[in-house]
Image (cartoon, rainbow, N blue to C red):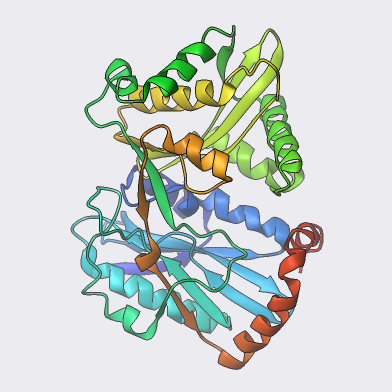
Length: 355
């Protein structure tokens, strides 16, 4: 086995195919998703674990975040390794530390898909990872989203009728009512349609006082992911008017809900129920064993997600970090403490100023 650091597109294509079908993977490992951080002036690289026949057996993708004199080596998810090659996982974690040092970063972290709950999509044993003895548990750098778990809707052994029967009567009623509102479902694929859906996400984000990246920063990423088949945007129309949309990304043999938005109307069209049920139906049609409706959100959003009988798998014990340059990192923390309240402004500036 060999470890290869690369940005070569041919290797990245092989990597993305691996990510799509490897159970412990997820969308945060897709190369195009990590390339999107270039709009902030950040860099990225992939580290692939390759066997003698040049088959990808594991690896990770790192975002190399930069802010003035500070650099950070961030692995948003992983490293991961195929079953049967578990002994290589320790070497991959060692490589994270090595690359962080080579690139003169002051800090690095990883996000192993580890959970105490049994699942094909998680690891349950970290006892053999000697590389973690030099690490500290948790994450300190928060400016590149790194996974802390999945919010799982189990679909194994279900069809549409048996799955909806597991939901509370009120939830079943909301789903069925949404189909009586003359909504038309469509998986959109053109640039214009995807941009319209993203505009709806932005409108909802502004109304709810949270931020998402501008369309200009995400356009190429989303269109590339759509072209390669890793992205699905599900939309609800009434007549010719877009009433709601959700964005899904596929990795690890499941879809993850990324973003959503809807028009606020009275009476409520229940587009959220409509589109999330369509995401579940899509997962069932593709023979997937579950759907990750994702963790987090406002109180109302969390309650809505949980109404689908979710089972959260938290990865906190898989989150580890290294402080590589203590004096630099201490200086960063001192500055960062005063900048936290300006996080949104900083993100907007980073998108415009390439370092």
